[in-house]
Image (cartoon, rainbow, N blue to C red; front, side, top):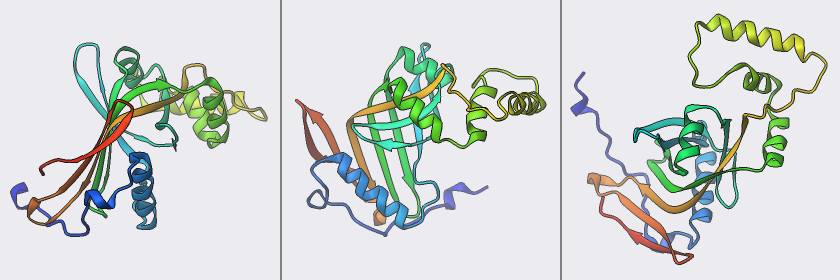
Length: 210
């Protein structure tokens, strides 16, 4: 593999300070709608980075499910990411939409959503996903794929004709942002990087060298 030859000259857009909304959450919504209009596959897929007790950084893709004061996602609280967030609540999320040559980096503090919010979201999940939350002790070692399938089939029978309740160990998190970076690919690697920093309760806009 000659990876040195893999390169793209980005030239699909520009990003100037005069173009962005004063509120980074609103700017995120503008870009997100553009990604949806461009039919970017799963534009709500985001890379979540967390820090473990031992100081190791872990990353994985999760799905953004709502944007309010912050960015919400759902998972098993007993998972690897759940263990990390129980110790260090600071985390980072990244969106990359290659079709638009855009990236958004967001840093902030993560908190659990209320039980009511988690219950309401769980009810609108597909039934198979509801059952999956009961099947999987996320991030734990298992012997085989067959174990998951057998457990799933058992639960299908157990909950037949019944509403599937939310497990106590499953629910939502919300990352409350303190930092944003909006990145737009530009020719000659002179990319646009516009940042927002929360200082004394107000968002200040700046620019970083590419």
